[in-house]
Image 1 (cartoon, one colour):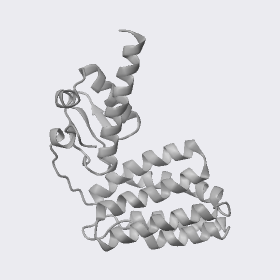
Image 2 (cartoon, rainbow, N blue to C red):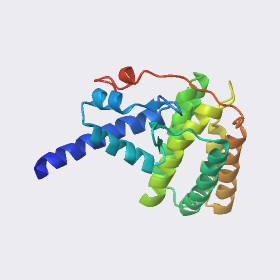
Image 3 (cartoon, helix red, strand yellow):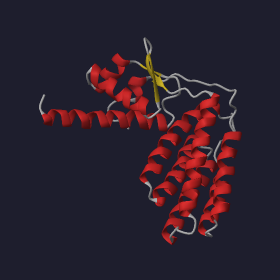
Length: 233
């Protein structure tokens, strides 16, 4: 195989990785879903070796579990793992809050306010999945503004894994995110009050965790062929 072929395969693997990653982040692939090797390689038209490579990358990111004799499945968070994800987020987002306090430009503030307005609209429409997506995106926007690519990368993966936690453990009829709390955090960041911003961020993440029922475990079945059909995503 030529170097050019290798590059094409790598680019194609990136596309497959992104499709599966995005489906997990969008809560379209529930925790525990079996990603059957033969089915997935046929869906994407690639070799067994290449789909295994993609699964390994997803496992490295903590989004897929690979077990001997069982194969790959979407990460199924235990209550303890859910708590560890929130603990990790608290540490990262406290750092981001300190980096941003007093540094937001007028354009940053306006952009974040527009984003919160979208959260309000999603809540009014009772679109829970969109609320979860927008809530995570709010935190990623803060990380992007902070300008630390390492923190952004870690946070992005944690938020994707948290989406699985919410899918499994969210109390029925009680969305886990709150645009009111985002508004308070933005206010503290805008007024250059790092300690208040950190405190509000910590309370916000604690409230998200508290609104979950970590004794609950729900699961639905999806058709992988339909989910990843050509033209979708």
